[in-house]
Length: 418
Image (cartoon, rainbow, N blue to C red; front, side):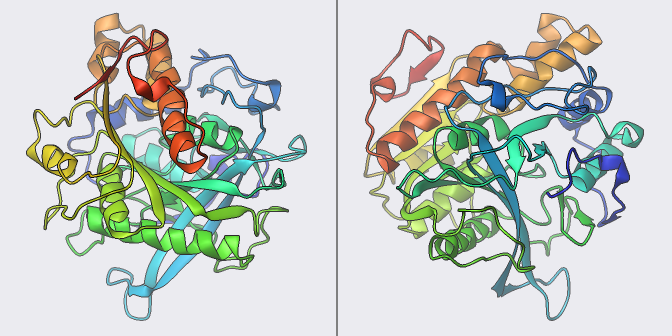
């Protein structure tokens, strides 16, 4: 991401085949909302630097994301990565697993750097093409991340959290959570899992989810991507640039990451991948899953003595044996939280976006709840800003707080499952 206030309509693209339209009710509705746009901010709180400025940000039709609440401005940079240990059967002989990733971090002197869009321009346009709104692709949300801004160095390296998205989703689908981490002093690395996501490569290629049994899109493939990104984190920590195009990185990024303080989290299939990678790789000091089904073949196995937290909704231990089986593997600190009224999409950006959709289309409260559940959207955003941060703060920064000790009057919807 290097173009100020990127206009998705200005980017030529070559794409792989689109996914079928069957089974896309929520995706279609969100696509409609993103295409038409709305001007109803869900959460206006946050420092001034967290709110995008400029002509694109002032568009009254543009959807908005809540600002992060931490003390630091946020920077972002995309990386083009190739894992040469994994041949790519889809792309053909002589090719290897190719990924895009984005590093979010605390930044300084951000005012002259453009803000990043919620999705890269070509990927966003491909997404809207898939749901039938390609002529309105310039109205998507902007983030609080300033592209290429220098890293804020405080004398200590940054703890790292790595994020894995869900099936047929994209690496920006939990931006609320990711930019909250960065504003609080973390480096957060989001992964675009090729063949199961919308993403854009530096040469203009745009990839979309592909239904092909040969595609490396199982949770184990995601986990392998995650572990490869950990290798790249270690390279950045050692002062080496892992970008295959030798892209110039933001000032201060090289050498700024702490490879001894790494956590991982993921939503849905990405949460299952996080569990798989945490079991297999001791570099991950703590893991978090956001409503993950925990279904793999072969099943997840082995004891895990490091901390792991689950935030449950549709996939609970009571209703899904694979989730209960994974819980039984946890030998270290383990937590299982549920927000009353939450559904599968409740621990992500949809809680910020769908209320704007509802206002735009005049939905009833029942119609909105049919999409995002009965959990209050403002409370849902506060939950995703507070609980993951408290978990990783405790285990990566040794900053124990009291939020995870039990029920909190500040978050009455959150229940601790025994």
